[in-house]
Length: 114
Image (tube, rainbow, N blue to C red):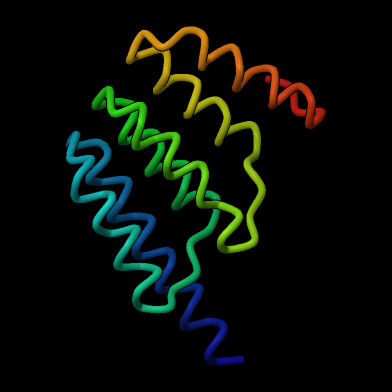
């Protein structure tokens, strides 16, 4: 239907903007866009979340990365390999090696492989 196509187009625009901000190392704006997306009833997808986690990780904001990863379930998503890899990268950038190993263990427990 037209409404479904419009929502899908909206998330594509959000994702493209988030990716551009991630590339510009503007993690705070990325977090703001994720919040705006949900506030405007545009359903975030894996790309939205994974790009946001990566943006925070690139800025060594590992706590923000893990917080974002923890909210996927709120929109009915389950972390995938890219989600875990981005979160592990964030923890690695923040030199939080024990957390990186916990994420790897969680990922393997779900049957996901890098």
